[in-house]
Image (cartoon, each protein chain N blue to C red):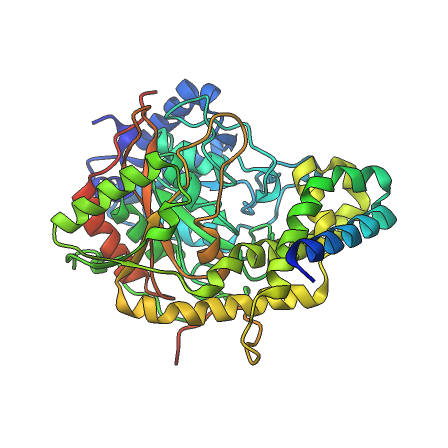
Length: 446
Length: 63
């Protein structure tokens, strides 16, 4: 087994059992980056010295039987909007050129405290909005990896790192994960602290995780999740043992949101339909169900909240440096300054009504199922359509994508599963059952 | 007022305000996005929200 192909759980186990050293693993990944990142362009910064130093320390400790936590010696990457002490964090923007934070984002702290090694920073669209990163999709370099967590998705898919932190305000974690054949989780709002993550909104930003298996996500979520007193949106809900939870796999009851198939291309609808049929044949109880009436204004609400919040968050910087902002985010900020207050509050009220109207559906099923994306990864630089993620970003409910097949042209597709607030344990168990049934995505042929 | 008329009014208001705050050149550059935002404004303004629905910020499980 080539060392760069180790996933999170496999690497952690091998290190724990002293059959793999963090030094060898980090060197293998740095070699992999040297080999292919010139084409993929996932990394904004590779912290070779820092990763090597951490790997040496982890290797020495592991040899003595000392493990810092469940991710001891496992490398990860962080989207370049996560603060990383002493490392440039530029958010894909000239506005932030040369910015070096003095502290780590809480999620980075939590992963490092569990023994994980920060390998570097991953490209993002500018400030996690729409102006694209240079990153290409490892499955087809002519295609976008999606965004805004472009580098996170591409790096994990291309086996340059087993785990990455991304973020999602509308569709920026789950969508790129799907375009790149990964498992991507956007947990419940407040489940993972957003402190030290450059914000876009106050009530829709989520830290997400990308890896290659549900098991890898379960282990990583258990580390990253938890209350942070320095983040006012952080939840005090206890963190269960997600890895234990996914050992309890059973055929789930799934509510299929058929109306979204009609928005997807026939190719996506067809492959998703085949996947659903396979789940049903394997024992899942599959029923068609409908989204509540407020769904039709969810997209408007999510975008209005994002634009107004982004305008507020960037107001001081924008007043000084408007010309340094690229066209997409510049326009978003300017339009955000014009959003009427009464409609902003209506958007917040839509969120509440949508959540409330969803409750009967969420109680009836283990998960709701949609295609993850309307299309496979599009060609070019534009990062694709986030409309199947927007409802769950607005409502704050957890969603996860699991690979479900390849198009005839060889691009991965996924199914998106959604469940109630703070039910990640059962959502991950459902996702793991689906993964068992549908199989894992192969590696892209780089 | 029908939907298209309301959307056109919102768009005209946004264009005027954009021109006043950011200048005519930027207002012109914002043109296509103004059309999108005006559509969202109509969606939100006309959706039949429950009268007692409060704004929702953070999320916590039911006690």
